[in-house]
Structure formats: structure tokens, C-alpha cells
Amino acid sequence: MAELRKDPLLERWVLIAEERAEKPQEFDDRPTVRRSGNCPFCEGSELETPNEVLALRKPGTMPDAPGWRVRVIPNKYPAVTIAGRGADEAVVNARSPEVPGYERQSALGVHEVIIESAVHVVRAGELSLAQTTDVLNVYRARLLALRAESNLRYVQIFRNVGEAAGASIEHLHSQLIGLPVVPTLIIDEVSAALAQFQKLGNCAFCELFDGELAAVSRIVEVTDRFVLFCPYASRFPYEMCLAPRKHAADFDSADDATLAEAAALMRRGLARLEQVCENAAYNCVLHTAPLESRACGHYHWHWEILPRIVKAAGFEWGTGVHINPVSPERAAATLRAAAVAL
Image (tube, rainbow, N blue to C red; front, side):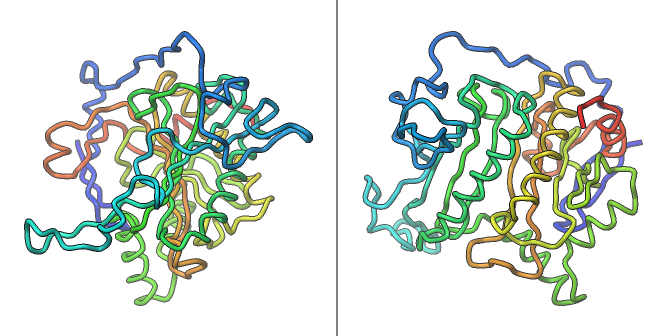
């Protein structure tokens, strides 16, 4: 029988309907097509991209030249604009003259691409542990650097893998968008967590993660510092959450040892997913505290891994309720059983 589940933090409903797994073409398992021709993200193609912002390089190599391991560049087609580069700077916190009550402001911010490998790879499981650790270290470095930007209030880091997840270039890469506003989803998470903190004096996320550890059935893997699990109200088949067991609000506050352990668990988790759903597209998204909320006691950074193997349709768009044909308990058991190098 299908089951409605409510997210314990956000009170967001999800419909677990495993019977739909038998529906023809319920899962989108189209393989990622490797495109022919020159890849602008491969080593040797540096002049085809904007000048790098940051790179992990071999000693003695020059910027915007071969010799790098991870490379950060401005997005060639940015969703937000750096001040002074074509932005309408007069439109800042302005009321719309057309409709009373409508507000607008210039989309001033930062949009960067993190190229995760100098060699052409398509899946995150193709990265070594050292490469995955490098990538997380670069995420931290960019978050720390962007804290100095006075116009930014939130920085979103995300990875799209596969066309169905929004990747326009197959070479593995992440993106970073710094915004002058805090997104509504993050506001909702922070507000819900703050309400519990004020009422009970504890972190709602810590309670949630401890509850998953106690329940066991949705756990994929646990380490000394981290837990990887399928959320109780998973919106997508094989959705996972990776979170530190010790309270921490900001991803960029993690030390080297913590990032190394996070990298190892993330790499194994994605390897499990890529084995269970061989051709699946997916998104990895980082949720971290807004820039002005550093080291707060009620928020808890975490990664969400969101497979894109079922399509949202009219019901989802009309209600905001996702239909998930694989229960998180079954998903976790399947992911645990996947053979990956530990």
C-alpha cells in the first residue's frame, strides 16, 4: 500500500508508492552519451575558458596552462553578474513600478565552475579518493574566500551529472553560485531548525541524524565523523543525505581530516549509486548556513544526493508532493549491498 510521509524538519509531504516501480518506463535509465570533439574542460584546453580563479597545480606550472588537478573558472554564461559587468546596479531592493507589492533587485553575485579533473571523466565514481578530497578542499577555499564579498548572503555549491540532471558539458564539474539573497528553501530549513532550538534547546538536525542511526534501516554507511542515509521522506529513489555526526553549521569550518573522511564516504556513496543505477543522472547539492549565520547552534551542514531517475509530472508540479516508487528502507538496503571498494 502507498504511504504518505512527512519530512520531520520541513513538514514536506512525500508519497512512497512502490507499486509504481512496476510501471513501464518508470525509471529513466538512458546512458550518458559521450560527445565527440574537443572538450573545453580537459587539460590543454585552458585558453578556451575564462581565466582561472583558483587551481590546484603542480609546482612551477603557470596559471591557465596545463599542470592542474582541480581548476576554478568563472562561468562563461553566468546566472548572476558580478557588479560592474553589465548589471543594472540601479535596481537594488527596488519596488516594481508596475505592480504594488512586487519587489526586485539586481542579480549581483558570483557564478563559477569547478572542473574536478584534468583528465576527461564523466562520473564522480571515476575520481580517486585524492581527487575527491581535492575537490572538497577547493569548495572550502572558495566558500572562505567569498565570505569577504559584502554583497553575498548565500553560496550554493552543486554538481549536475548527466543530461537529465542539467549537465550541459559531460566532463565532471561542479558549480558555485553566490547570491545576494538567502534562498527560500534554506530559509525554511533554518527557520524550522531555529524553532526547535528555541523550544527544546537542541539542534533539529542532530536529533534527526541520531534518530536515523538508531533506526538503522535507512543507513547506508557510518564512519567516525559522518553518516550516510536515505531520508525517511525521500523524494527520489535512492536519495541520500551525507552529514557530519558532530554539530557544525558551516561546511567551510571543516578541518582537513574531516574533509578527507567526508570525501571518502561521498566517493563510496556515489560509487554505490552508480552501481545500483548504472546510467542514472543525479545532483549533489550542499546545504550550509547562510554567510551571516556562521557557527550558529541550530543549523547543520549536509549534502543531498538526488538521483534523477523518475520524472516530475503534473501531480508533483501541482501539489509539491513527490511520488517515490522506492521506499528509503529498500533503497538503503540495496545501496548497502552494492560492492564498492572501502
